[in-house]
Length: 395
Image (cartoon, rainbow, N blue to C red; front, top):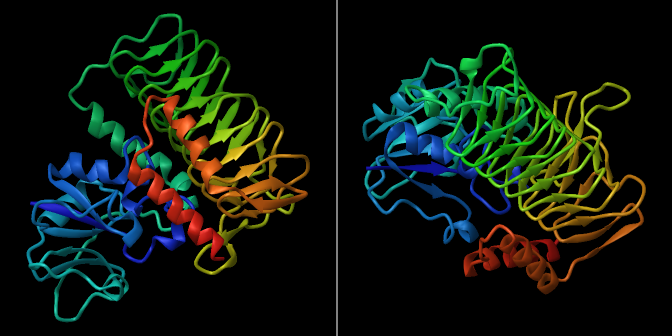
């Protein structure tokens, strides 16, 4: 038995975060969406995604019993409803398909997600649905995701001891340290939500954390970091300065002073010292961002939105990002002034203009970055980046 997480027609809408991964590999809380489905269901998980991603993120090896919209957060109630599906049934809410009971080797057509087929037996889901259909939904609903994951990962377990040199505001039961986690001389406030510190993570002296906050395995919060929840940092991140309501997927650095707010970063990103993001327009109006599907700017419907950066994106020292800036995969942004609000993948430059970065140089840089975390670049990693580069060239 296994589960297929389908991109369900949403892959393009979530770029550049999904330029290098399926929708189900996004990380809204402590866990990736796929990890949440695996832990809660006990079933293997695979992906129905873009052809160029299929080698790195294949379908499950075992027979699939369920096919689920990969943008859905796996709450206990939703997982139970999916597990109850039988072949020929579709779980629906508000006229949209949430999941299908798999039948043989067939699979849902793209149109079946937006309009459930009439020949299938519809099962209405009445519970709450948390979905991530646009990049900004990740930070908007990060708090709910952390709360659900915190309960899942900590229930019935005992936290490692928190040093007495810390100050706790709120319920100390909402602080959980995994094995090897170190927190010293910091302030932890749980009045608004839990604080989770992953395995071998380090919160250095003088940090201030206001939950809900998740600090991934082996991540370091530098001295004096100020973190306002809801915020989640994946594994192996280095974070300093001020961060509010943001998601850093993993293996990325914002190691110095500077403000990051209402933002989402992919993996292997690096923000230079004193990089700052604007997350609110002076008009207090809704923020517009670039859509890869619309090939132009779209209204997010939200007042706060900062930086959306794909994997291997980088900024130089003192870089300033305007509200709703979208930075593509392996782009390198530097120089004075505000760069454009849409920076394509593999672009090299800043406010004075961009050129397309050489793919071989970009790959060498990516390889060096990954080696610093003792993770080798695989043949599949290289092929994926070459594909994204080719797509950018064709624009």
